[in-house]
Every structure is written in structure tokens, then in C-alpha cells.
Length: 158
Image (tube, rainbow, N blue to C red; front, side, top):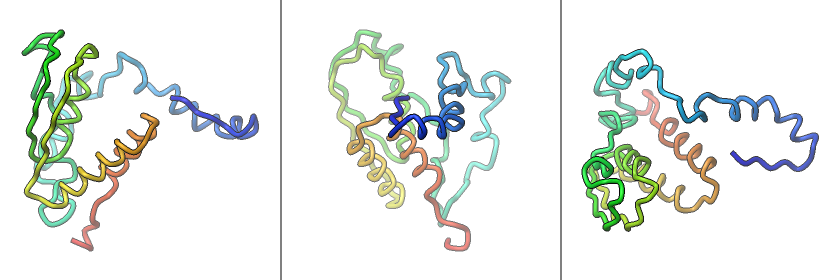
């Protein structure tokens, strides 16, 4: 995480917040979620399957993200042909696939994403636009996560 400060005083005043992020266990390569360490199902699949944020709109999709492509194990680590993927719904599986692509993958990736719910489509478009318009990876990820998990309708509005 690269941080720039206007001067030493700003750096010193920000140190408590920066230290929490910089020293976070999430930044370690060996980090695993608690559910994996405790050999249990993630809470996302233990709770109600239909956690709605408005009229029939799911907060984060109705299933956990999985790498449905599994390029490494299906085609091999050195597969470099172009890929065309078709998705319906939230971006979570698409993001998981991108995150799991081997670093050596050099092919192009063409993706079509659609959904019957206009709210989900709009959220996907906004998140992809954020990703395409921002340069700093950490800030982009923070912004997308904030949008994904914080932008929802209150019960009083649904």
C-alpha cells in the first residue's frame, strides 16, 4: 500500500490508522478466513439464503463467489488462449475468476455480464466504471467494496 503525505506532521498524525492497515493480517500471504481455520461453513452460507436489500434485491448475490473456470486445473497453468465468458448476476464469480487466473496467463478475456434485475446491472456497471477509471489498485478495491456492501436501500424505503 503506497501512501503519500504532504509532510512529516501529516505522516505522524496518520500513523495510528496507517499502522492498522499496514500491519493487518489480511496483508499476509498465509492469511485465511476464520471459517477455513475453524473448518466450518462461511457465515454467508449459514444465514438466510435470501438476504434482501430492497424488493427482491440481494445484498451480495445468493451464493458465495467461486472460480467456476478453474483455468489452472482444467486447462493447465500455461494456457494462454483467448477466453470468452458469459455471466448472469453479481460480479462476485467474475472477480473470483480474475483473481485466480495464473499470473502467466497472457490471453485476452472477453466477458458478457447480464442480469434480469436492473439494480444488479446498474451496480455492476458502476463498479466496473470505478475499476476502469481509477489508477491506484488499493483505492479502487476499497471504493468498490464500499459501494458493494454499503449502497443499499433501508427497510423503510423498500
